[in-house]
Image 1 (tube, rainbow, N blue to C red):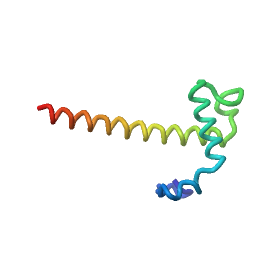
Image 2 (image 1 turned 45 degrees about the horizontal axis):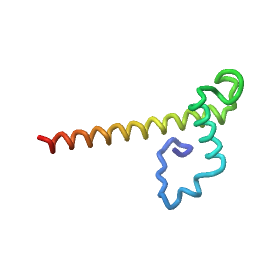
Image 3 (image 1 turned 30 degrees about the horizontal axis):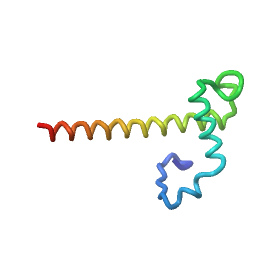
Image 4 (image 1 turned 180 degrees about the vertical axis):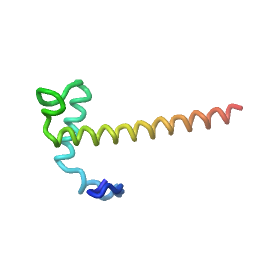
Length: 86
């Protein structure tokens, strides 16, 4: 999303210009928190740097979208397979 909240579509050929070291840092923090089940700094959410809470929030939403798309795709394949069995 851009600053105005509109979705931004990026061509795969343009991805490299959007994937920065900051992105990889945020992704690393996200996976670390998910895998270890804890926040990167002592304390609760209020004690975390703003960029971390924002990055984790955005990446959780994006992960949910990807997971939902995968579930829908799997369901479509299962429904198609059932049609062919009949």
